[in-house]
Each structure stands twice: as C-alpha cells, then as structure tokens.
Image (cartoon, rainbow, N blue to C red; front, side):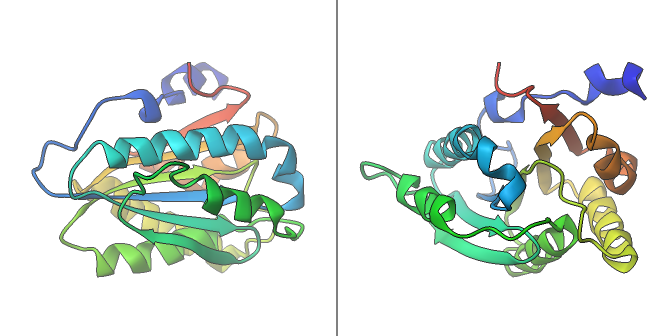
Length: 195
C-alpha cells in the first residue's frame, strides 16, 4: 500500500478552473472541529479558503461549509463571499467552538449526500479536512459511507473528492472506507498539503 501513496497524493485545490461541463459547481468544504484536529486548524482553514477562492473565480458556483466531529453542523451555505474577509469569519466560528472528542466521516458524507440531492443539477467538489474521521463511526455508518463514496466515484458530476490531513498512521482507517473509490477519492496524509 505504501507504494501506492504517491499515486494517492493529489493537489486538487491547486488544479484548474471550472469542471468544463457548463454547470455550476457546489463546493462542499468540511472542516474537522474535534479536539484532536485543533493543531491543524490554521492549515485546514488555508485549504478551505483556497477552495472558496476557486468557487469565487467561477460565476454561478456556490459554497457549503460544514464543521464536524461526531456530529455535523452547517456553517455557511450560499454564494462565495467576495467581500473583504470572505469566509474567514465563518471559519473563525468553527475554531472557537468546543470540539468533541472523535470524528465520524460517515455522518458527514451522509449529510453531503443529502445536500447533493438538493443540488442535483450541479457539479460537486468535496473537500474533507480531518485528522482521521473514523473514531466514532459504527459499522453501519462505515458501510453507508462506502456506498455513498462508490456512487460519487461513478457520478461524473462529482468532479473532485479529496480528504486532506490524516496522520500517516491513521490513513489506513480511511482507506478501508474509500480506497475502492480511487477514481475520485484522494487521500493526502499530514503534513502533505498544498505544494
């Protein structure tokens, strides 16, 4: 598996422009707010801001920002914010919340899947910023997350699905959920980030 790691490292945040479909894109940005991810908050916010700026550059694109740990909270849904500060205030709100111990990407992908159904006419980019994400996930939630990500891998409207931040020792837990969806899911371990 370590030999495949270079193939899994992909800088979607730095890669180019609109999806090319002519459809608007919804940029789903999820930031881990658990206690264990606190030390990665600033780099995660930088990556979230870069994805937001990508949306800002493409007329008609929208942004949905979520904070998650063992639960999922909506932080912002709407057009990219072009005014000074952009989404920084929303991200600061995530930073100041009291994060619970443990994270559950199963609940997160289920929530994003619900929102993708609402935004079915649009393309989607998913950026998950987490240090692991599987600590509190049940077997049923892991199975559902795998089913959802399998649908995303087959859906041409899902143009990017990237998970950034897991510690190298924890990335195998996420691979069990998403390796089958390698067409779309890009797992970037910490500290590999924008280069």
